[in-house]
Length: 405
Image 1 (tube, rainbow, N blue to C red):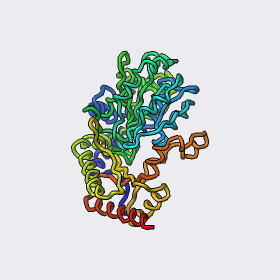
Image 2: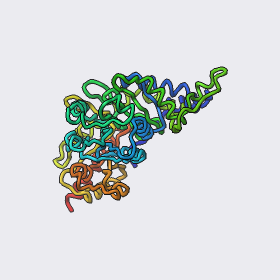
Image 3: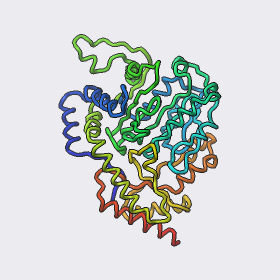
Image 4: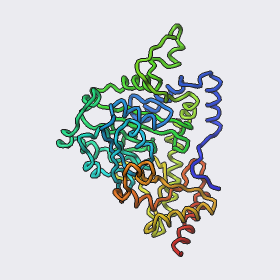
């Protein structure tokens, strides 16, 4: 069976994790702090905070910005549930909007129509690793009548003076937009290092701070360190200094710090990310595109535009002129040929929780159309060219068998 997305666990990672275990530091310690600094340099920002998940990062930012009951946060209907769940945790309302036909990313025009006096945050999602059009966000939020609609209610909201753009970049570490890396493209960016991501720490995530003046992003990093560790003003590493045992709790914080065991994996992954991992993933996606381009039923994903390049996280193939039921039948046929595939994602309005809140998939026709025809093909480091050809053959024969019925 060809798997869908196994992590790359080799001897380099095993040795680094073993070294972390032997060091005595298995919670947040020197490796986590080193990983944060190297991520900041990679993303072209001054401050990055590592956490136990991207989900925790999104929620911490929303709560810091004062998002609460009565507020609205705009999200694409086409995303993983975590993007909206964190809004619910804060008591606010997710306002879902449709996506673009070509690249699955959130529609700027739909955002414009969805902004109200209650809107505090927009969470664009870089689907599959392709950055959203962040210049369009900046231009949109600078429009006079929309700027005037923003009603700040907290010191942070007053300081920013506009809607916050919080990028859900769970897929897009290593992508570029206007020659700038993800992490430096908007106010705040959150990455995921879950087991299936391009760069994994088994479980993990990070917040990249890039807010404009008068915000001090290094001070924000220090604030979020406290928020992510029970509101405690010293972590375990700081308390190891001679006589520095005493600490205070300055707020009712959360518990979502990254450990050195996870950071050990991340350090190896990051060191070889740009010159090894991304090159291999690009090769895989390019080969898929070459082999599938000959079929009239094949709608290939977008990896490069005039001003952006993906991180090649997914290969979201769409099959033209099929129904959702036919797509599901194709997937089953592919599995029967010992090839694992997936679907990214089930749009939020078709999930029971959000459907029961009154969201209707009929209101998001592009999201549904993209979803109903989408099949994600395997993309992972150890995938060989021979296996890619096997996968493509399995897809082609499965699609054509369904068309013949």
